[in-house]
Image (tube, rainbow, N blue to C red; front, side):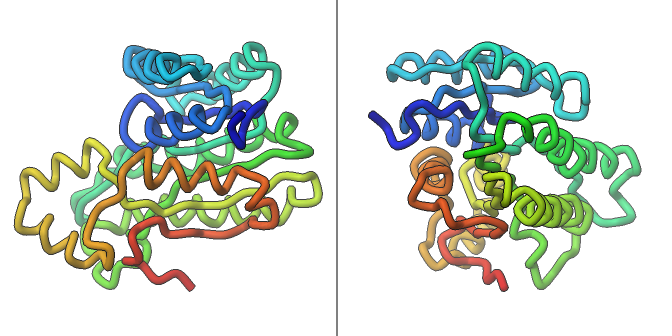
Length: 251
């Protein structure tokens, strides 16, 4: 029996990358997992892998910018698995570039898919999380960069997620709900592409990480999420934790 046996988790953006790694790890620890994302076929592939390992999972198409879609995936998760104890807000459209280059549309999409979707989904999940629920939201160490050039819009939406998470921890702690943020470095498809196409910059980036490597989506990031969702972390809430090999200093 896994440490999360009997738990039900919902993970957004779980068709690939970090979200997929988190879904794999949660399922490996015994949780039933609702795998959601914009592309259903990717979610179905994640579910097929989970099932091949002996786990239980459900694939659900979802655009996190749609309030209707968010309500539907919560209902489907609870209807299929009978409850919801773990919510992971991972999906995010990324508004990168200089301030003069980021369009209103790109920034709005970043806001709608990030902090707005996070708040909406936390509120939708709240009634089901009461008693023993865990929320894990994803932010970024981009907000801690000494040079914010080209990262301002992205950092802004991610920092908003940190504030919402802290509020949830404070407001809902008495209801038995814990809420934390992780700020990961991981081999997402986007980062892998960037590293392959910018080898010199990528090498310098890895050298700036004390552990000299980027994290694995399942073995590093997913495994840590499992720990945060377990009873061993039952007194941890309202925290922002960098899962980045020691690169960022939070404080």
